[in-house]
Amino acid sequence: MKNALYVILLLSGIHLQAQTPNQTLHKAYQQFGKVKSFKSEVKIYFDLPSVSIEDMSGKAFYKAPSKFRIRLKGIAFLPKDNPFNVFALIKDSTQYASVGNGSETIGAETCKIISVIPNGDSDIIMAKIWIGTTSNCPLKMQITSRTNGVVLIENTYGRFAKNSLPDKMRFTVDMNKFKVPKAMAVDINNTPKKTATSTEKPKGTIEFVFANYTLNVVVDDSVFKEDGK
Amino acid sequence: MLELIKIESYKIAAKPRSYIGFAAIFAIVVLIQIALFADGQAYLDFLIQSLNQSFQIEGMGFNGNMVGFIILQTLIIQMPLLVALVSGDAISGEIQGGTIRSLLTKPVSRSRIVWAKFIAAELYTFLLILWLGILAWLGSLLFFGNGDLVVLKSDSLVIVRAADTVWRFLAAFGVAFLSLSVVVALSFLLSAFSENSIAPIIITMSIILLFTIIGTFDIPIFNAVKPFLFTTHMIIWRNFFDRPLPLTQIAASVGILIVHITAFLSVTLIYFNRKDITQ
Image 1 (cartoon, rainbow over the protein chains, first blue to last red):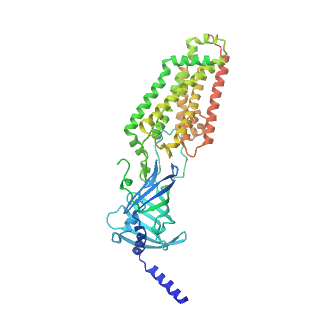
Image 2 (spheres, each protein chain N blue to C red):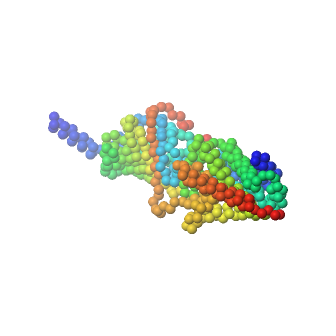
Image 3 (cartoon, each protein chain N blue to C red):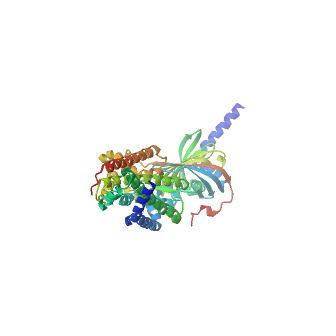
């Protein structure tokens, strides 16, 4: 009995060792691939330097392969990239090259770090993905794109981990320093606080907390259109 | 006393210059509204372009609350002039015209006369603020619609939700009225000392202009003086659009404005009661 257990463990170890980055990515995609569309409620928390904005609530919509939209009332600062775009990128292994970058533990889960470089023309230059070895979910993604720079996405999973749908998504975005001439802002008598000059761009974070996912429901395409278009 | 206030209010209403303020506000507000209707969105997009590079900004449409706020902060520099035009000659105008002697022959104390004139000037100021509120805020809401307010500062941005704007605007108008009351009290003080009706108006404006210029420059020596200038506290209405609400700062500034009004009015009362009117 003991020997049999050793054999099983050894085999599973060999299996883990043998899994290529492409296979790991394919596994992660397969989980999410079952989701053709979803609707959910979303609460958004902002922590943006030089922008004071209250938390907001809205609804999130997704439709395969890559349509994602958050609908809410009022002004909101949202990440420019569709956070599920990375699944569209890893869907077809002929469309990218992948390289394993070792492993790291996030929370209680060991993750494989894989860098994905798309072939041909793509806005994404490189995506570095931390995929949990147990859950097969991307726990962390660092996406470098031509238009939006570097965005770090950290995911926390709950009930819908089997579909790689996170309960929480935390985006860390590089921000440009906000500065408007006093005369244009008509901000007389305001003495800006002196801060240490740093060449580093300030970082802002936006957190999506999803609730009440409804999977594979009909989502009309009009939801994804810009208002008034 | 009520009769005296009525008489003083009638005097203000009878002067053509009292309507300059209403006409000026109408002209400025309509001009800004037309300009913002044409180019407001482009102006806003230009100001927030650095944020647009990092985020997808949803719902950033130009609306009545934003227009109302922009007009309010533009006009707040001109409003003291419009108020001083009327309150500056309340006493000196009577001295220059010689009507002060007949006024003082009435069986009412000099203090009551000053109070009646001050209250009448305050009523005028209130109507001016009300006019501004109706045109700049309610008018803009009517033409541009409701929406979240973007409060633009030189180094930051505050987003105030549409549902949260009404009380903030009302409080801001309240504090703007208190600020203009300082101008009324100052011009009254200068008016009591002067025998020329134009001098108090010009001196009031010069003081406000000088203090505002000092407030605009970010120079250490000026920064040390700023807390002692009443003009610094006159723009405290803007703080009602901050989050979290700087209640201590607002309360301190309101207190300082009240102290200024009390001081200016007290000196006016003491001086006018002792003033030797011979002409």
